[in-house]
Image (cartoon, rainbow over all chains, first blue to last red; front, side, top):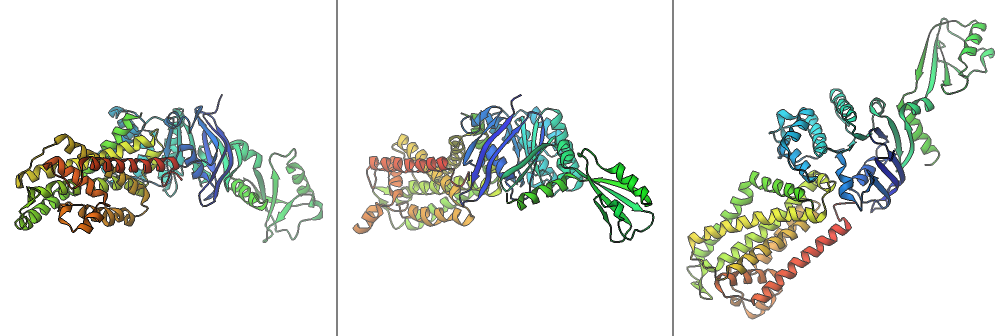
Length: 312
Length: 253
C-alpha cells in the first residue's frame, strides 16, 4: 500500500544558515500512530512545519495522499490537521465560532451538527459560547485538537501534545488519540516523553540534529535494543567475585550484597542457565532475583549519545 | 478559489469589529465630527469661502479621506498583525488557502470597515453643513479605491512589523502628517508658491483633490492626474504584496 505521507530528502536551512533538516526521508502508512522522538532543537517542529506548509523547504519533496505539498497544496493540506506545540488562540473569539472558522478555512460550510459533534467529543460542548480566554489550559489544548479536526482530516499532527500538562490531562490526550486511531486517522506526534511513545505509538522515529537516526517498529525496537539486567540479592555478602565466575560479565555492588548480570535478550544464548549452575557450584546462594528491561527512554538516550560520540 | 475560506476570514474579521465597535467605529466618527465642529465653526467663521464653497463644507471631503486612510491602514495592519502576534496565523497558513485569497479576505474586511466609518461621517456631516455631491460615480470610485489602497498598505505594514512600535510607526509618523499636509483642511492654492510645488510631492494631495472634485467640481490638480496617481498607488501596493507572497517574507521562513 502506498504510504499516506512520503517525505523524500527534505532539507531545510534557515536564513541565518542553521540547517534544521538534513536530507530527511520518511514514509508513514495509513492508520498508524507514529511517534517522532528527539531532544529540543532536533528538528521535530521544523519537519512538521515543512509538511504542513508553514516553512518553505530548501529542497526535497513531500507528498500527502499522493499530492505534492507545493504543486498540489490544496489537496495535500485538505488531508492534514495540525495541533501546534504552543497554544496559539485568539483570546476574544467564541469557542464554537473558532471551530467553525477552522472548518471554513478548509472550504467547508459551518455545519452545526458536525461542529457540535466534535465539541462533544472533546468535552467542550458546554463551553461552546464561551470566549477562548475563559478556558483552562487543558480546555485550550482540547480546543486546538477540535479546530484541527474540524475539517475531518486523515492525518493529524500533534506537536508535543502533552508538554507541560498534568497526568490526568495527559491520559485524557492519550484516550483522544486512541479513539482517533480507531476511526482510522493517521497520527504523527512528537514528544519528549518516551512513556508517551511507548504507550501510543506503533512505530517510533528518532530525530537528532536534523537527521532521522532511526525508524523502527516500537516493539521491534525495544526487543532489538533492549538489554536486560539480572540482579541477584545475595544471602550473604560476597567479598569478591570468585575466579570460577570470571567468564560472566558480573558486577558486585559496593555493599557486596548484590550481583548484577547484563545480557542481551536477542543473543543466541543469554548465558543464564550456565550462570546459575556456576553460582551453585561456587556455593553462592541468593535470596531473590529480579530482571529489568531497558525502557525506550534508555534506548533513546543511548542513541542520541552514541550519535554524538560518533560525530553525527 | 476557496470562497468559503475567504468568507470565513472576512466574517471573523467583521466579528472582531463588532466586538470592538467603540474603538473601530464610534471613536473615529466622534473625532472626525469634533474636527468639523472645531474647524468648521471656529475657523470657518473667519474663512468664509474656499473656491466658492463654505469652509465647513469644504473640509468635509478632506476629513472623510483622512479617516478613510487612517482607518483602512490601522484596521488592515492590526487585522494581520494580531494573528501573527498570537500565533493563530498558523491556521490560515496551513489551510488550503492561497495568499491571494488571504489578501482578499483581510484587505476586503479592513476596507469594508473603513467605508462604513466613512459613510457614517458623510451622513453626520450632512447635519452640520450643506453638502452637495456633483459626481457621485467618481466619488464612489475615489472612496473605494482609497479604502482598498490604504488597506493594502496597512496589510503590508502588518506583515512587515515585528513589534507594536513598528505597527504604529508608519501610520502615525508618515501617513498622518502626509494626510494633514495633503490639503484636508485647505486648498493648496492658499499656500505660498514654493510650498505649492513641494506639496505636489505628497501623494495624498491627489487623493483628496480628486475626492473633493467629485463633491464640488473644483480641484487643486486635474481629475485625471488624481485618478492616475491613485492607480499608481494601488499598483505599487499590489506589487509589494506580490513580492511578499513570492518570497514568503515574514510569513514563511
